[in-house]
Length: 368
Image (cartoon, rainbow, N blue to C red):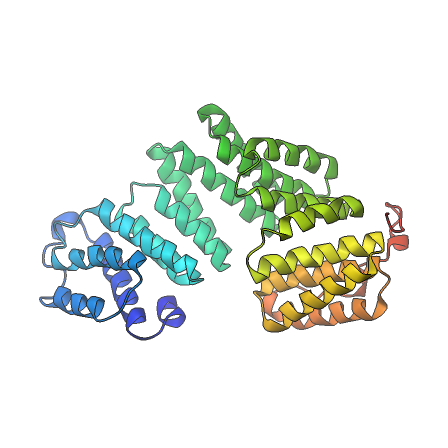
């Protein structure tokens, strides 16, 4: 079980046994829950709970879930679901996305009439890199939210499905999902989710190389987000990528530097620096190109998630082509070849990054 693989010691045993018991409780009809757990099970769980110095963020939720073992017939489904959500969110903050997904699923089973837990399970499964699992739970969130009804969850689940289908290359399904989300947002005044749907559509248009449409959608998203929204840096980063694809290198650089000031994780910084290396190569800023490349390679050597590494190496390859840097083109291609088994994608090669003058549809040369 993923919980036992992600965690160690007594905490792993405590979380795994708690998750198992919630799933069992949720699978049993309410009128059959009395006496579900063995005598003494609750006392043993409490002993395990109090023998460990737990983070305050999960100590009370786990105490609530232990109460379910003591009195399963009296346990409140909504309280159990909320407790599982707290454990899931704590796990996600620790980077334990398998454990987080497992507890979000348990939350959904404890209170199956609510749409938020399956939505959370889908989002966390996406962060875990399990798109098939994510799709199952996001579709469940749509179905449950439609019955409640909870239009916020309904629209948000379609935004997440649209993003998933975009990554998968199922572009028609992605378009339909974003369209459903936007219709719901307009009918029910959901401005925040509407902004996220525009952002998702912008990423889809970028994938399809519909650059003018992507620009219009980015403007819509930026207006809907407002100047202080926490997702605005991600939108600005995508706008920078759009500028790179359009060869508007001088416009991409300032956007990337603005977002870099807010970047916190190594993965985020690495992808932004790889893009900045590309922008610097396009404008002939040799020193910035060299610095970004060196920093990116250091991050790659320390180890990153396979999908993050693949994105960074692809952007570094494009940067090397824009700078006409033959040795680093070869270096990036070799790194991509080595990483291919981990990502499940074909290795990139020299032909994946054509030199600007080889592109017939776009003018070559550097931009000042």
